[in-house]
Structures are given as C-alpha cells and as structure tokens.
Image (cartoon, rainbow, N blue to C red; front, side):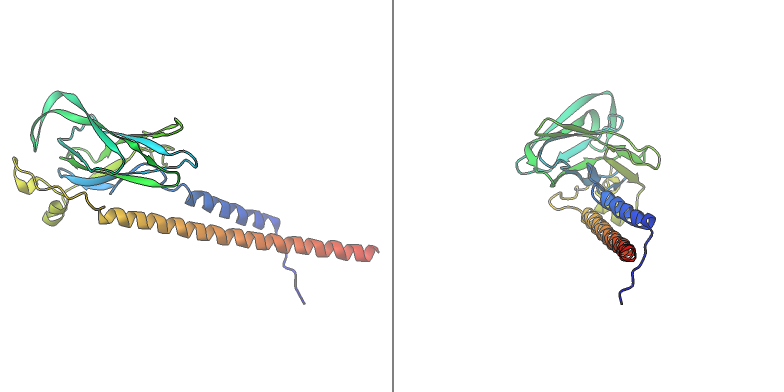
Length: 260
C-alpha cells in the first residue's frame, strides 16, 4: 500500500530557494570583461587576452575600449589582428620621461580601442595583446574597460577591487608576481637575461596560453556543476511538493468520506 510521506512546507520552500539561488549564481558567474591569464611576472613581457562576453540577449557588442594605467606607462603595447575588427592605439605625452628596456620613454599608449566588429548575444571575443615591460614596484595593474552595444547601451567595467566583495562592474585586474626562476622568466618573455639594451622575443600571440584554456575549462565545469546541482534541488523540491499536495488531497478525501 502506498504510504504518504509528509514533508514540512518550510523544507520545500528551502529546497526551491536553494535551487533558484544556485541557478542564479551559475548563470552570470565571470560574465564580465577580464584579462587572462590573471597573473604575470614583474619586469617581464607577457601575452595577455582581454576576454569580452556579450551579456545582452538582443544587442551585439560593437566597440571595446581598454584604458592603461597612466601611473605605470608601458614601453611595449602590441595587438593581435582580430578578423572583422579595427584596432586603434592612443598615446599620451609623459609629464616626465622614464627609462625602459626600449630606451628613453617620452610617450606611452593610454587606450586601446577595438571597433567595427560584433560580438553576438551569448558569445564572447578575445582580444590578444603583448604588454611590457611590466612594472616591478606594484602588485596589480587595473585596466578600466568600456563596452558599447549596437543599441547604444554602454557598460563601464571600471570599479577597482574593494574588500572581499566583488563590485558590480569590476575592472580587469592583472596581478603581478615576483620572478619564478630562469625557466619561467624565459617563458614569460622576461628581459632580465637579455641585458639592458636587448629584449627576449615576446611569446607568440597566435595561440591562447594554456593557463587561459584551463581557466575557461574550469569556469565551464563549475557552471555545469552548479546547473546540475540546481536541477537536482528543483527536482527534489517539486517531488516533495507533489507528495505534500497528494497527502493533503488524501486527508480532504478522507474527511469528505467521513462527513458523507
């Protein structure tokens, strides 16, 4: 004989709420402009990529602007061609010339603009760059980014890190680490071994770094796991709700039978 299991309504609501929370968390995770990989070696030259997702359901992204920190001028800024996109580098005069591995620096790139292409809804685009010489007197570089959509909407990813809580529109942040040995220094294009007037060849931007791919795979795995957990939670909540309604129907039926 079928035995009715009574589940408290409070437990059902908790299960449904937990499932919904996981779904929400799994959806927009990491859905903002980022720089990958998120770390690079101080004093070196690194191949990086600005990853730009389109969060709009109907409008395409048509322009991306990335601002370089004016307090840390870079002597080398090189971009990789992206099919369908035009790139423009804007430079500014430095108030005081600085020495670099490329000689005396009197001006530096202040902004990179990609335009003319499109990032369709629910898609993303990677814009590769080579940056150097990375500073040695700071632990982070913040790149403010502005994303423009075809319908005129502008999203400003310009908020810097603030405590443990991530801001709503965080700017891409590159964390700088100390030297990691000769092998790693060569891999990251460090200039230390090349001497003051020469530069080690920068890594080829023709392929995405392995760490970037691993980061993307991890993000996808986390999102998939979150969705599976959410679906299980919602299924359990729905099943429990069905049982509760079934029990209520049986009680009402029993009462009606006794009244009749």
